[in-house]
Image 1 (cartoon, rainbow, N blue to C red):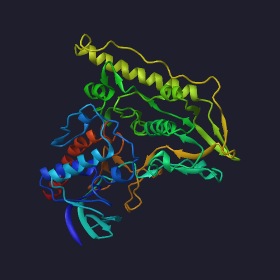
Image 2 (image 1 turned 60 degrees about the vertical axis):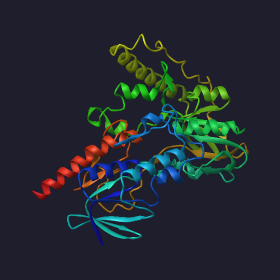
Image 3 (image 1 turned 30 degrees about the vertical axis):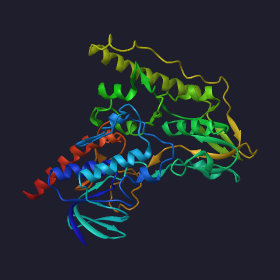
Image 4 (image 1 turned 120 degrees about the vertical axis):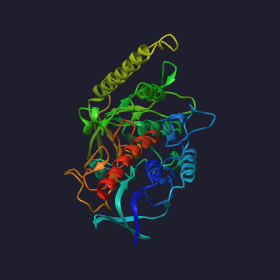
Length: 413
């Protein structure tokens, strides 16, 4: 059995950021990954995907984007190269192609069993991210034969889909991007819309992420939120990173010919049933967007920018049919594929430590897990609103590395 002070499971941006901060504190460690560095970016993304954050926002401890297109959006090969170079720069001690089989408490620390041997550590960092398993609704089992189903983790491009129209369930960032791409390939697309977060790509001449960064929205800490459990379940922003910086919202999709329906409520006797609350969902998303724009306007005014940038304005409300369809026959042959763009969840099936609540969620306080010496990174709103972004990994890693180091020092005293 190999021994090391800290094991980091996962060599994506979160694991690498933690590695840098542990190295700065002279804490010996190893990163274990089932694939290569940035494995999820390599193997679980569709072909045309770009980051939702501008290139200037790709920042890690001691490292940042230095190319000639700071306001562009990285493709997946560019993200992989970015993280590969970072791992090389910090000499991250990565053990690639090492699959973790189990983690168990042992001798005041943890035994991490892998398919390439065991490790013993005093502290453990779970940096496998929040998007290990694609979520599918219970009604997925009721899809009639003849209709193919897939998830965004399996989808690569429209050419892999079987003939016929496509029903996409979920209208957050992933759902709207897939709807647009598949419709442009010549297919009829129906988008089932539930709760979503509408934001423009640009506002007052600047990327919305530039405003959110400047105004401190992305740095909001978890202790400042009234209902952090709810905040951690908020869907991803309805954004796309395209070269033309276009806003891809429901108005853009419906104008292109994509049919909008309400949240998928169930499937019975081969018929999909949709909620009649589409209008309410869209009105709520519009309201929240305008609140964000109010925050930006207030910040710009307070910082004396009003005369230097475009004037404030508001976007047209989401246009919704007065009578959106409430059902769709899946047996008629019109729909060939359903894509479940219904979110993701982390996978800790290998974690044999009693740190889960009754809903199977990891118990933690800002990344400090409810077990001695255990930490988690990369989850939504872990310590800050930006925690799940590349740009959020560094700050969270710094905080948790400080906590880890202090715990070790106390134990040694």
